[in-house]
Image (tube, rainbow, N blue to C red; front, side, top):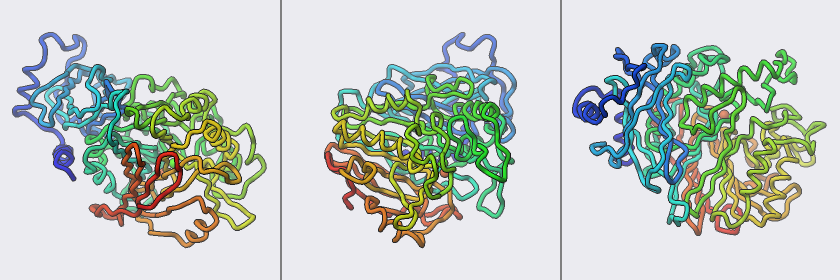
Length: 528
Ligand code: FE
Ligand code: CA
């Protein structure tokens, strides 16, 4: 762990910094009359910054700063029912002795007293440090980073792909190691930031409520997760690109359909118009708890979470939403043999507008590497026997026509530097993307394992040799918890699978389980 990350982790553990030089400096910097006349800051009996700070969606000239005031984080937040002014400050050095930008935002009760500061006019490709003040309370200091200038040719970029952090299944040790990864350009969080379930018992940790349905339920669940000091340290150390997968709303949801879409004999179907109310609550809570731009503000049960990023000429990142515009899983969500409707040509993983936007981006010449940052693996994984395939049907494997549309486009466009990064399956996989029936290698996919979901795991599983043998395009599997570090240069795209041997107890060391290089124009894995 480098000194900055240790500093940030230390700050987040200490929580509130009261009094001292920092307070004096802040008071002196407040312009007279800047306070909103109708909104006076309360005097806090307890630390309102229990959920830490975060930043996200870096552009060359700006980034989003985030916090949420919650002195009673597990009980609705505990804030007075009024808008509360929150000061923010930005500095170019970690001790924040010289403030280069500052301002005031209002934390609204309509918004769970979350604060999103969308900064503009910053310098590209550099680190900034930030903090918030509400009343006399000061937040921990966070570090963020703007993207390189659009015309820049950065020598290297480093980013992490991580997600699936079931609180009950284990400790967030991997987040502490991510906090200590040194200088990252961003962390892509593919989703499953929370799990919606009630407590199940007999696990290392325990959820705070039954399954979440209402806005207050979701807020309290996000608070439980965000109070974890290791997650808090990672969020304060790096800018994040957040997407959601299923558990931010409901297991295996697809478009207007909940998990209870009528396909389960043990549960009544939930009408889509009722599920829309749950999505509205879930998306509002997701937005409230993530460093997102105004463009991602949900409108009722709808949200535009897909969006693009550029890191000079080296990397373009397309963050996908493969839940909102999906057609329902034709064969359910489990691992199963293809059913009637499996190959339906009308099957979609994305709504048509998103698919058209993505196709436009997946072309050669826009950037050295095109990264598809998304949720469930595109890679085909046949778990069956020869001649009797079985697929995990909530993944692209359950939507072969949609996958074929995507990969046919890649083949026809001539793009050969496509890297997909995904997760969701609670194990590490890597392999080469091909059209249905084989043919040329069209891209490479690195699927990150989970932060904690699934518990300690194992190095392999009983069926691993069989699965690898009948899926020759797959080159790597590991079932430990962890994340993937990507180090990108013009002449290579490197993936290192970081792991921890256990999450049932805190403090496991960081260990590597595999490292692979992709060379420009040559999709596929080369072991390092
Ligand atoms: Fe998950
Ligand atoms: Ca998931």
